[in-house]
Image 1 (cartoon, rainbow over the protein chains, first blue to last red):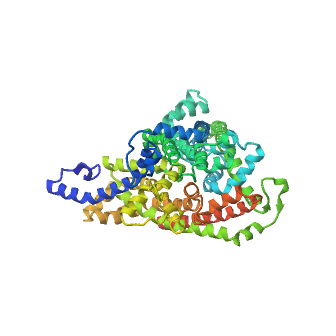
Image 2 (cartoon, helix red, strand yellow):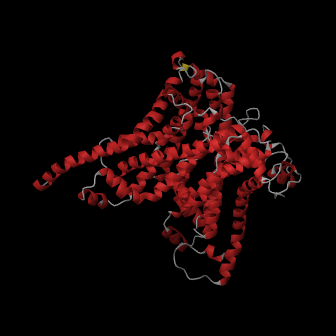
Image 3 (cartoon, helix red, strand yellow):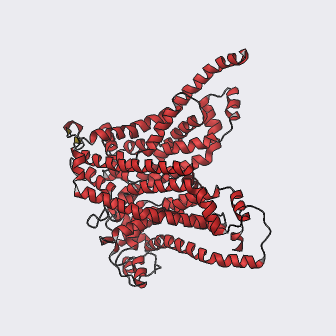
Length: 294
Length: 303
């Protein structure tokens, strides 16, 4: 642990033992504070996951029992499936997340690339237009957007769910700053070789910004997966419900149905947890570069 | 300008024109979608806010600014504004203090710090529904583990989520719980972008760790700090999902924020689409005001 207190980067002589001990002692209160926060964060989540394995009497026992005596998960899960169409909601959510993310990647990267690499008339005006859309909160346009989708005839359809969510100035700016960092010689060389502009984009430039593409993919999937407001407005038909929307309706105010609440909440967390474990670096990068969302 | 360069210019002009067309083509899909699904609704909202209507535009009736004046005398709307303001006034300062302190403690890339950052960021990826249901259970009067622990510490259970004087505080706590990881990460990356030479210079001048924090770290992260503050305030004013999944706006409207009320009026009431839109313009006004004020402050401080 003494290692953690070394100064950054600069190669430094190892400080004498006494100094290291003092540093360690000074670190103890900080460490306790950090552990306390970590505990506050993890305790509810762990307790909820454990709850998914308990039977109803166990959940109700007082004083509370921390660990399940026997594994009741399959019963609880069967109970969830009986009351909630979990599979259908999962499929809907996957369609919403993937259906939005794939075109979003392509369209927003394309626009970001154009802003980063081309000079053209009206660039500033267009740039301001994109910037302006970032300032418009979804909550302010949700009613007109609903009416618009209603008049197009897309209510309760994946078209209505997905298409308004594809373009995002946030992704455009993320892609733009990634493309800006690439050397100019690359495209000149490709042009001399006779590659057309779209080919330069897909074959030369896009592969060079893969980390940013992964960031956009993960954040976009996460956004759709957790999106509550738009699916609630759009998908009133029960067969169109996504996980967020469906669980909010079915469990929202019925947490007294304990096994349902514990199990559904625990299971609903899993996919994003796995996504986070594998892509933590990218999630953090996406938030750190701009931190607009939240 | 020599003749050669002029010739080159002419030749490259057609090439540049071609590039220009390509640029427009590349931007077009995103621009068209944003215009249709963001700019048009924004512009339309001003029109809709002057109508008395449900979803049927042909039955809409022009009422001028009636929706606006009506909303200002709507006690429930005023109450929702006050709830939103109170929520923001509690959430944002706490969130910023926690963010600043944790980022200062976690800025170095050691194994433990990375681990803590990883943990703190975890609820950010969880959905509001998961978080809402989890916390309803955690604070539950009969089975909640936190309720039980608080009792052990001598804090009597006021029925946290069903008590008008505590529900909003629980919601604030959960909102911070879910998002302080973002604040910490943004400030950590701001601190990591400070050149080491600044710290070295301060150390040579005899500044200790605490002094370095106040004279080097804080001034250097100010732009990120103001930016974060702005996004936090705006985000708090737009609060919807955690409230909706945890309390549904209750008990007796004590957690009904502006967006929860607007949503309720727009989608759970008949013929109030125009009215709800007028109320959302107030939200827009608030957010614009904050953006302008914060940008002014940011420009002043960066000079």
